[in-house]
Length: 114
Image (cartoon, rainbow, N blue to C red):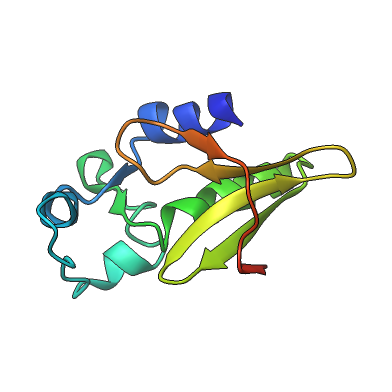
């Protein structure tokens, strides 16, 4: 999953919207007034320099590609945040792909698995 997230972010150019990231780091909620930040049309933009999204769109793309590869990955909604989760009969871990530094893995239980 680390390689998958790296390829999607580094090679395909998907990234968290920089203006929203600055607001979030400053403790502001960040305005989501552009549909490209919420839906996957933003991260799939033809312009590689504008493939921006948020936690509402980046995990959706990661999950879609992972499922296409046959991985047991699904979306998890926890409050106002969305992330991916690998869950099979032996292993369960959360995949945070929307952070600017790459991918982080957290274990734990989400609110609603999709």
